[in-house]
Image (cartoon, rainbow, N blue to C red; front, side, top):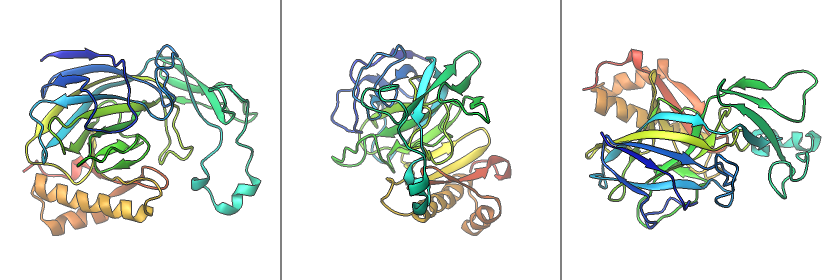
Length: 318
């Protein structure tokens, strides 16, 4: 199958149907591309766009039409430079309000990572060893060094109608999902609203805890390789992820738009429908399976939830 090696010259911060197409691809074609970090810098540290999760795309998938589903399989999501950054302090939305007065300052060193910012700290990334290590400040008690787990925070299509959300929130179209299961080897299923789907990717993280409680992961640029399949008339209600071990439904909503319990309800409802439609499981059996084997992830601390079902418990697809 053809391989498209595509490096964008222009980046965007909205999931819009109106931008010029970066590349036309057919189902099964491979796309090899790069993403900028959330601050707009590339793998050489050159600033290519303003901060705020600049997106690579849109990719037009031939044959994809409204009502279809696209399945984006990520064969590579890899570090491509030796540094990244995070906030120094947890986001206040992740903490009890009464703790705010006793928190350490969010300021560290002005201009250390980005001009005009004192709340960001640098991490060293070892591309060969796939590890991350906090450069500064230094803890007297522990070494903040961990295995990397590269992921993409932003993957989405142009949403329905003329809606063009920024690359900050998420929704049924995908968007700024910030889910650490969207990584190398995973497949993301998304609904299609416009001809060609108009797919965007961006916002690479070298490592991120569940829920993105810092308000960011270890932000960095990324090398990305993916293929796309089209399923006719099979649009899900929102994003779904498949890994080697799990089916995952995401109750995807913008942060602060509603409580996490709504995200949980969205994810659970979609999972029951997925099990019934694709696996032929009776709805009552799907309810019981979720009730005894379901595992929930906090995707974003003030927005989305995900429900995971291990594939080993499932019958063959219907």
